[in-house]
Length: 193
Image 1 (cartoon, helix red, strand yellow):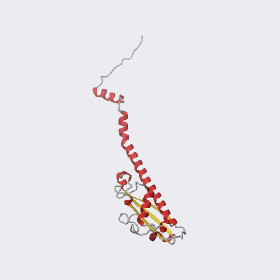
Image 2: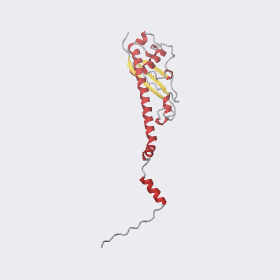
Image 3: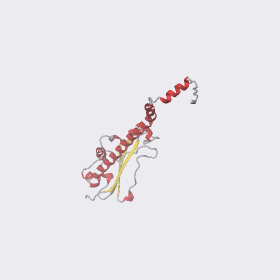
Image 4: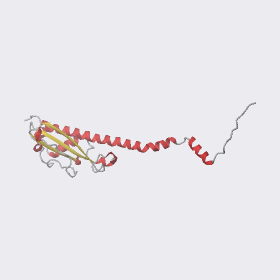
């Protein structure tokens, strides 16, 4: 004699049936998972783009400063009677076409010794960008000195694109304003006289 256990099935409630169907159904899980990950992913991608553009602008400005400062170091600027305005244009030309030259300020100072040079900040005490050295028509050798002198060239650039990426906190005013990018080079000019 064979004994078979009795199977009792409880009647399923409609709510339990719907819940079990939802648990078993895997349609749309990829869409739900992407919806959970999409916002952080897009913020990450935008952050990478923003930082990439920031470093591109910064590196380009540094290259422009080095290229223009070479004219001061070798004495070409003094011999060619270069003006402050044309020196700024030379910085912009070396930096690239995506640098707005109207937002570039150049600060050039010279001394006979290294201790006579004081690094200049791009902003004043109230956070405003400082002006350029001299007027655009003045000769640059008034500020860059002559042969065998120590020269510090500081270039400040108001980068407005930082306002478009406020979550990166690159700009002034809590990240909502433009960023001030600074590039500088210090050198002792060659004895070209």
